[in-house]
Image (cartoon, rainbow, N blue to C red):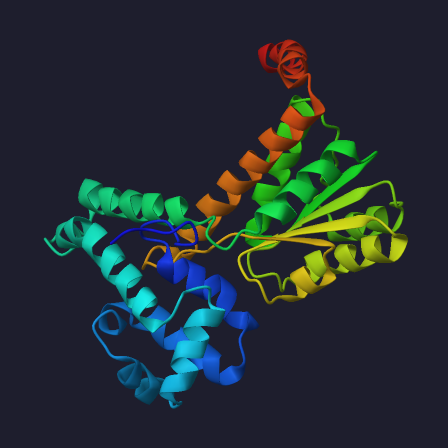
Length: 289
């Protein structure tokens, strides 16, 4: 099959569907849910088969596929078949009994690599460019993340600091909210939440928005409260495999995306290499002591 520029990367079709599905009308969303839950069957089904499983019409199936970003149902089928072919070998390995030790480790790594390769499918590249510019030119950057996204938020703040982009990342929820309320129109709040629904992260986003700051939200779901609160929403796909379901893929994708965002911001600002060298010079004595 010949890929078009709009095709998700190999292995990323289900992730792309999951990220966009919340935007759909209820009947179309049921179609998307069937595709996410049963991609192997959908790859061989007709539009009528999917319509029966989703409790809707064939016309709705076709419309749902188009609203998900595909040319139509046949285009979706071909992409699912492509993905199934690409993961055939790894699936065979997973079924061969290697479900512990190094065999299981290889299975997890293979899945994570596939999920990571397709995670950017739902990303709006124009939004990413606007986020990079906003973060590069802001007077003050506040990074917030809680729960499973807390370590990711802290890690990207450290990388900003080490590369010459001052940033704050308080871990205490009260301090996050108080700091966000003191931001101005010249500042940026970078809020990180895989689900986009964590109320502890949403509160500082609301405070920053009320203060006039630019709110940038990073999440795995296009239709989420965080995206609604954000001036710039950055959606990257979550995992679809069994280990992705346990949060492994989402964590890896989130960290990788934030590192990429940090690199782009510091490159836009210039002097990143010099700042990193200076940070290293200051850090070594702290480690030695």
